[in-house]
Length: 136
Image 1 (cartoon, rainbow, N blue to C red):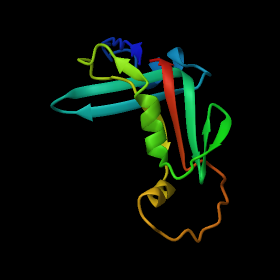
Image 2: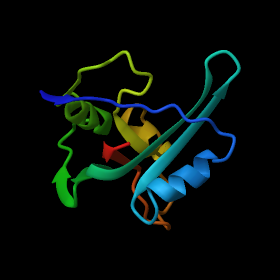
Image 3: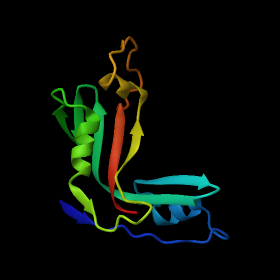
């Protein structure tokens, strides 16, 4: 397992917003901004950039950093879990402890349930697109 340390920084939002911080920090690079708002636990914004690993589900195949592989009956989320388990977070007391971030589309349900697939794929986007980030 590769060790991973998580660092956080608390910011006061009087002058900056999560979006302006994201724009300054990430700029034109590939990144994510996740926001939450809870009256008990508080408000959190997670910003990350520089994905070092990208995994996409493409029907019976998956793509890892641009290279295509057959799933061979393995569920996509099991493939993702294998990659998550490569890392050990050393300071787990943090609220944010890393992981894979992105999208999981509705069609992924077919890996769990036997449902008809009568619709043509007209938009050609991955069923799922997840990224692991180097910096955030």
